[in-house]
Structures are given as C-alpha cells and as structure tokens.
Amino acid sequence: MNKGQAEFEYYKTLPQPVEAADSLKEIEASYGALVQQGLTPLVAALEKADMPAYQKQVQTVQDALEGRFARAVEGCGINSC
Image (cartoon, rainbow, N blue to C red):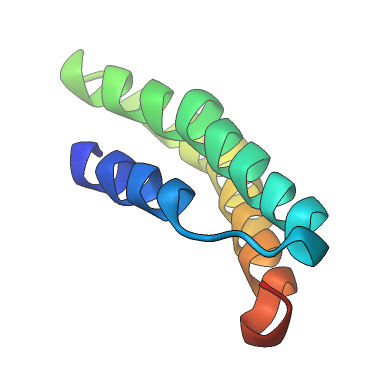
C-alpha cells in the first residue's frame, strides 16, 4: 500500500490541465475512498486474521470502490487529462 500511495503522491505533482480539473478531482476523490473505505479495512482484517471480515469487505465494498476509481481513470482518458 505504501508504494501505491507514493505513486499517487507523485501523480499529484504532475502538471494538471485546467480543462481536466473535474476529471482529476474525481480521480483523487475515488482514490481516497478506495484507500480509506476499501484497502485500510482489508489490511486491518488481514492483520487480525479475521477472514470473515475480510470476505465481507471484499464482497460488499471493495468491488464498488475499485469500479469507481477505474471509471474515473478511464473517464479522464489520454486526450482529456
């Protein structure tokens, strides 16, 4: 998770076209939600060896958060961001 966060911090330092501001804002928001609501609870469940909590998190939350982030990135596209 640390490497992913470091890469995201680097991404935020790159030039951001003004016309892509809304798309980039959604990428940042969806990434933040993925980490806070998705990955952090998964890691906590694994650290406790709580497989039922891990499975529940994956089945109820993780896919939706990953989907939102993927759509935000895809929506930005090469030409618009």
